[in-house]
Length: 110
Image 1 (tube, rainbow, N blue to C red):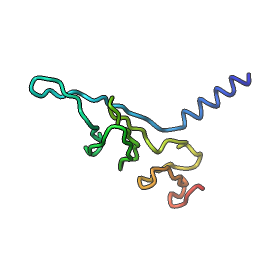
Image 2 (cartoon, rainbow, N blue to C red; image 1 turned 135 degrees about the vertical axis):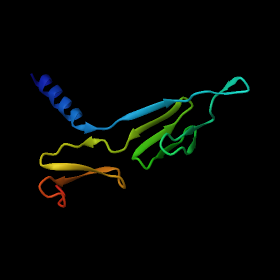
Image 3 (cartoon, rainbow, N blue to C red; image 1 turned 60 degrees about the vertical axis):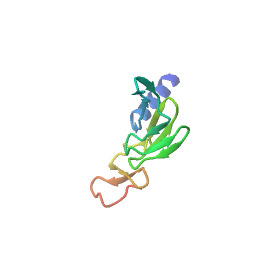
Image 4 (cartoon, rainbow, N blue to C red; image 1 turned 180 degrees about the vertical axis):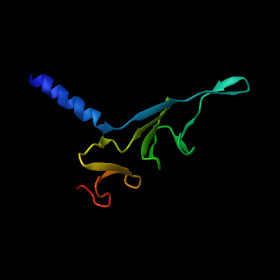
C-alpha cells in the first residue's frame, strides 16, 4: 500500500511539472557531390554558431548544448506550475515562474 501511495504521489508531482527537451541531429550538406558534416552547431532559435562541446542559454529560456551528434536544448523553467489560487507567469528575464493571486494579479502569492 505504501508503494502505491508513493507512486501516486510521484505521478502527481510529475504531472504538475513543466519542462521539455529537444534534440536535432546534424544533417550532412552536399558539396561537390560529397556529403560534408558540419564543424559547429547552429542555435535553432537565433541562428548563432557554437563550437562542439559548448553550452549556452537562449533568450527563450532554453539551455542548449552542442555535440558532434547535434544540438540539444532543454527548458530552464521546469518546476511546479500549479499552485491553488494562483496563476503561474514565466519571467523571461529570470527564466523562473512567478505566482500571482487569481483574485488580484498585482499581488504575488508568496
